[in-house]
Length: 575
Image 1: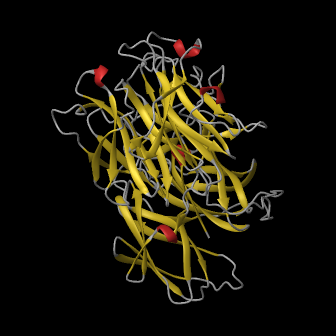
Image 2: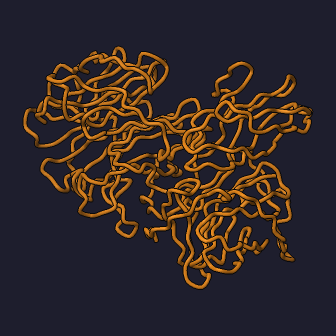
Image 3: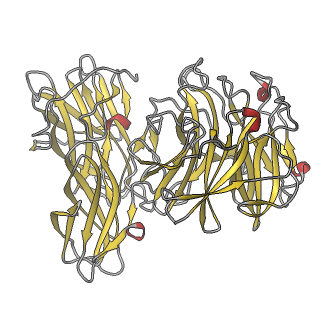
């Protein structure tokens, strides 16, 4: 798996031409359009794969707010960068350096582990920095001058607890209407161990009491690779009224770097060390079989619909990588019967992960209304081509106009829906390579509630039977799934969700390097449902469509019989 084979493609002039094929529905297929999963519709689903960024992103801090994910991280220790993305996958995110330190100050160098936080109606970034000497690391803060995390920031000075001791990885904790500052620091002037400290705050920039030692790295796993012995990368986690502090222990330069947990007892005082309990064993450790080493320095964020908690952490792919190759990864947090978090083993780069619930639903409330038109920005496309758009609406019975980057591209008649029911309608629109803005103008009596792009990239599907995912700069999302051998390969698209049961168009973008036509099999939830003939196309992608019956809720679609001549770019769902 995870092979890297050069696969350049020719120009894509005919890449998106639609070839309608005969579909043979298999007798006995139980995907008959029955209601199936009746859970509330929370988006078209799909999967992604780690890593979630294509550059080194140690110490990731991720926040979800108002339709976007934001990330900051240690950016070469030289400045502070913020990324903005519609999804938890930041590979095509907007990126901006929001602050450069002035030269010749005590905070000009070694900017580590910035934390982006939204506190009491304002954005803040807390970061550690020094003057080039590690022993002079202290905590500092930036305050945003607007509601835009990618906008300008004002330097607000040191977050000073009065001890003037070495401090890194600080962030604000909100608990029962009180603010606290939590960080990693030294007890004195010698780098023996990094402890977890806490102090009360009177506001997001001011510590109002002495620091309190909460926890020290006394366990064997925390001391691996030391001295110095480590507790750092503190992150705040809340669930059903319970409060936790996750932290990273063991040397960050070793593969043993892991994530531990402190738990505040019910009704406990955060400033009382005896009210906190430390787990004896870490909740996430390296997995040699999955080739994930040094998982740590995490943050927590939510799914777009608020129903799930996600952990974002950095890790490496090599046992000897040390501080190199640390990239952000994500997976969902689960909870045991006692209400304790379960992080699970870190997932391999080949594992397809179901996206956060509600991801991909671009809600109108977070769009910009301009001259009667809803504008949805940050819609990325690696190449120029058609994209399926699903509109959520109420009312209907008239025509809506869709434009891309200010130019009208499509008109769509929306069927009338009554009684407060949700309406759903699909249309294809052409996107330009790069970032796009999609505009929707609806007539009076029709309300656009949200939109989605119902595309499923093959490189994020689960490759099976000798198939593999690889990067490709000419593909829709920058990658493809390739087959192998005599047609034993397959790519599984799990978590394909539709709002209503019925017949849908499955648009497959594929290339066929053989001199003759090749046939793919399409399976739904393990049963053969259709076949699709892929014409010879050399290295160009062509699109073919088949009709399949999908059940309401989650479906599993497998593109089977991938041989060494075939590659899949994506599948689209339309109706």
